[in-house]
Image (cartoon, rainbow, N blue to C red):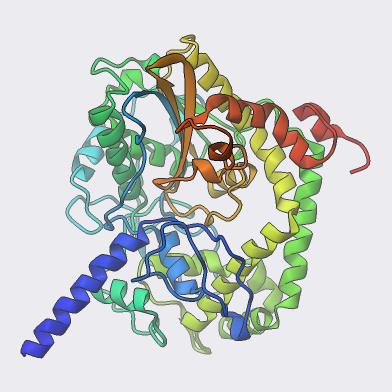
Length: 510
C-alpha cells in the first residue's frame, strides 16, 4: 500500500510538470530529419526547453496534445513585461477561435458525440462560465455589423453542429481503443482524466489572463472605458464571434452591451479592401502543388488511408477528400474513441501516421519557401493596418487602446510566417498573437513593440528585430523597425523589386 501511494504521488507530480509544460508553445530551431516509420532520429532544440516533459524525438501525440490546448492547464505568460520606465500604450490581439466541432465527417461513421450546450458545473470548468452564459442571454439586442447580428452569441446545441464551439464530450466514455502505445505525456494526461477541452472556456481563460496583466497591472483601460477605446473585428462565423465574446467577457466581465460593437471581416486574411492579389494566389497554387507532391512520396500515409478506406468501405480518394484528421483530432481532444464499423476500427496508429505527416509537411513548407511568398502578401494588409493604428496611437491621434481580431488558423499562420516566425508551431485552438506598443517615459517620443505568441515573447526571433541587440543597447525593439519591415522589407523579402503592395500583387512574369 505504501509503495502504491508513493507511486501515485510521483505520478501526480509528473502530471503537474506535464501540465505546466503543455501550456508553452515552443519553436523548432533545428530541422529534424525523418527516420524509419516517420519518427525523427534527432532531438529538437527549443526556446525554453523543458527536459522533464519535452519528448527527445518528434512525438505526434505530444504535438496533438499541444494543439488541443487543454484549458485546465496552468499557463505562464510574458505579456505586459517591460522595463519599469516603459508605459503600455496599446495592445493588438489576434486570436484563433477556440476548440470546435469538425468541419468534415469521416464517411459512413457516426459523428463524435460532443455536447455544445454550455453547462457551468461540468468539466472543463471556469468560474466565470455561469456568469458568461447569463450575460450572453442579455445581449440579443446588441448592435453588430451585418451579418453578425444574426449569429448566436454562444453555442447551444446538445449535439454540436459542424464547426461549432464545444464544451465537452461524454466524459463517462472510457477510451478503450486509443492507448495501444502511449508516450509519457499521453499516459500522464489521459490517466489524470483532464483531457477535455472547451472552445468557450479556452477564451474565457485567455481574457482573464489578459485582464490580470493589462487592466489590473498596467491600467490599460480606465474604469469608465468607452466604446471608442476598443476595436473589435471578427469573421462571419459563429465560432469566431463567440470566441471574441468569451475573451472579451474574461477581459471585461459584465461589460455594457451598448459599448460593444463587432465589425465584420469578410476575408479570413483580414485584408479588407485589399484582397485582390493575383501573385499571392499563384504562390498559394504552387504551395498546394508542393503539398500534393509530398503526400505522393509518403507511402506509409497512402497505406494508412487505404486501410481506413477499407474500414469505412469507401474509395481511398473519397476518404482522403474528407480530410479525416479534422474529425480524428476532435475525437482525440475530447477523449472519445475513434469510429468503428463492422470492418474494424480506426485507431491510434492511423492517427499518428497522419499527424506525423502534418508535422513533416510543415517542415518541408519551411524549407521550400513557397508558403513564405504567400504569407508575405497574405499578411501585409492586416500588418499594415496594425502599424497604422500603432503610429496613430503613438502620436496621440487614436483613442483605441485594445484591439481584438477574432480569426482562424489561416489568419494567424501567414502572419507568423511573414514576421519570420516560420518555425513556430501551427496555431493551436484559442492561440493568441499579440502586438504590444510601449512608450519610454524617459524619452516620450520613443516607442517600442513586443510580439508575443501564446504568452512567449518572440520579439527578438522576428526578422525585423532578431539582430537588434547587436546594433543597439536599447532593451526594447523600436516601433520603427516594425514599420520599416511592413513598408519596405516585406517586399524586399519577395525578391521582386516591388516597392508597394499593389506592385507586388500584380507584377508580371511570376
